[in-house]
Length: 96
Image (cartoon, rainbow, N blue to C red):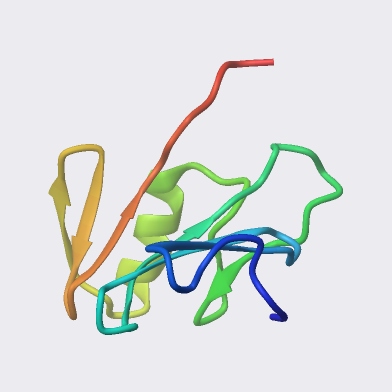
């Protein structure tokens, strides 16, 4: 991934990947949160988990595909809490 724009050493590191990754670290250096960024453009690379495309899709469709693969989650606020202490949510910006 190369060197981040910010951190580690702070609590958040921004990596110049495609799509961009923002990783939040705990004080002991372990990863607490990975954010997959995109600008909504078709030129962005896609992010996948176990063969399921995560980016540029509706959250409900992603959740349905992951459930079909055997992953389990419960709705939580604006997202889902997944077995194994994983969470997913959608953070929407202004519409075009």
